[in-house]
Length: 164
Ligand code: ADP
Image (tube, rainbow, N blue to C red; front, side, top):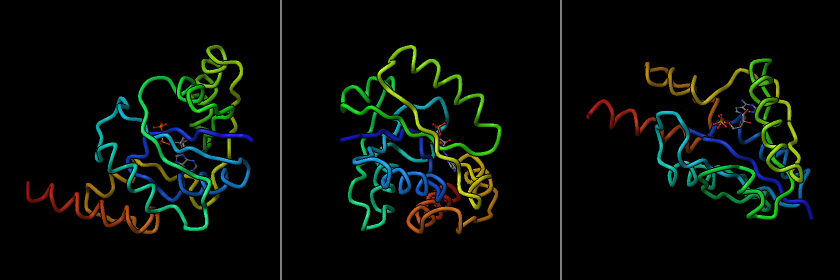
C-alpha cells in the first residue's frame, strides 16, 4: 500500500492542482492533499475554506483522495500518516530550482520519503494561484482556470472586498 501526500497552500485551488491530484490518485493507493495552514504568504482563503473547496471540487469517482490541514514540516506529516511519497507538480523551468532545493532538504531530513514530480498538463503550464488572485483582484475572471466552486468563492470574496 503506497500512500502519498500532496502538499501546498492551494490559495486558491486551481485546475492545475486538481489535475495533479487526480493523476496522482491513479498512481498511488491513497493520496492525502495537505493544505498548509500557515504559508509565508498573504492568504485569500482560510484553511477551512481551502479544504472545503478541495473536497467539493474532487470528482465523485475519485475516492482515494482525502484532504487534511497541516502545520510544520511536510516530512513530519508524511511520517505521521505513514506516507512514503510526496507528490509535487512541476510547471515551467521556474519551479525546478525551488523544488530541487526543497527535495534535497527533505531527503536529508527524511531519507525514507521519496518525492515524485508530475509534469503540469499543457493547458495549466502557466497557471498559478498567485496569478489567479492578481488578475481576479484587477477585475478579470479566469473562470476556465479554476473549478466552478472556486470561481463562485472568488466572485463572492471580491464582492465582499468591494463592499468592505
Ligand atoms: P506552494 O507549495 O508553493 O504553496 P501551491 O499551493 O501553489 O504551492 O502548489 C502546490 C503544488 O502544486 C506545487 O507542487 C506546485 O508546483 C503545484 N502546482 C501549482 N500549480 C500547478 C499547475 N498549474 N500545474 C501543475 N502543478 C501545479
